[in-house]
Length: 179
Image 1 (cartoon, helix red, strand yellow):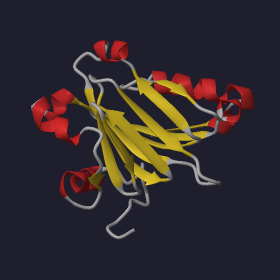
Image 2 (cartoon, helix red, strand yellow):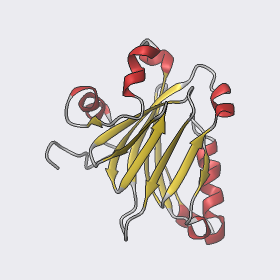
Image 3 (tube, one colour):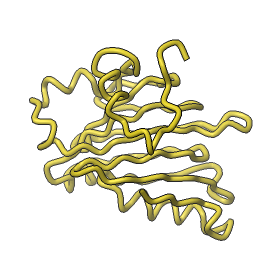
């Protein structure tokens, strides 16, 4: 597992460092933040076979996956993201959602979408994100479409299964039912 921190960069260079990291992920985004001048982040990233796992603790951000980026997506990935704290949300296929702690949001890299997170007070947004190649999932896209940009509970059903499979090394204090 690699751990990357904003504190490892000069204050004025931190947001550019974050943008470079995001640009190198399996599902890249255009990003902006009102905290760009003093951006702060911690990224823990691990590769588990074909799946990339990333635990983020970041300043507020808005990330956009443009139509042009989707055309360059090759076979594409599904990107479920578990809210670990703060406020995170997404928009895809005309649906918008804000996830509560312990809920998952799922995106499809082959469809335009946006993600956002908001810092409230001293609490930064935190999330566990997966990049799962569509070829590994092996599901019909029509079966996955109803899950896009919709909250999935992290303690039951599909979301519960994802939470169980999320590596402990990336999220040592996984949410449990009722927390």
